[in-house]
Image (spheres, rainbow, N blue to C red):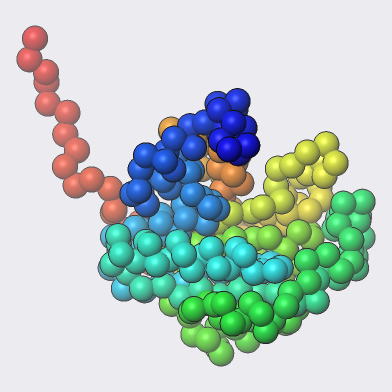
Length: 269
């Protein structure tokens, strides 16, 4: 009852409460953000639709920064729902040290906000709950080097970046430098630590935004950029954390995927 009263007193919560109460359709809930971690569903759903249009039968999703594991379990939930809608198989991988955050290297890792030891993982407990996702345990700067050769993942279409630090995020961005067969031409990404409060004060010179900017400067054929979308959901702050990796040199980047019938005949008056 208390939760319902809180929802009624807040316009967005009221709307989401009514959507959850009224609609049982996954796509509708995802559209309105009335579902757990809609950012994960958004990235995975749009990646699946893109892959389907390009003729792929399977894609991969990655979570960098698993922590306790709730996000990875949520990825599994969305993957199962989307598989039914788009008829495409999915692989899911979660990268983490399992030891919690390491010691920040310098100011770029925001030591005034992050602390060594945050977000440790109970590996056994998490693995007992996972249905299909695979954990990749270790420092991302090391595990990513052998990841593609070891796992041979389906083309990656969706990634959640939640490693918190500038340094580890920078290492994880090497994903986009993998051979083309492991990547979609456009990859839907969620960067958790790119907007925040007056405590974090995220900016272009520290944290994830600095890692993104440095990657863009270093790679002419690959760019990470925020999409400019209509009907993007004025209440959904997570939409401001969506970025798209554009792999301009990918052999399928220019493959036509839009509506095939686009004509504007003269209107009768």
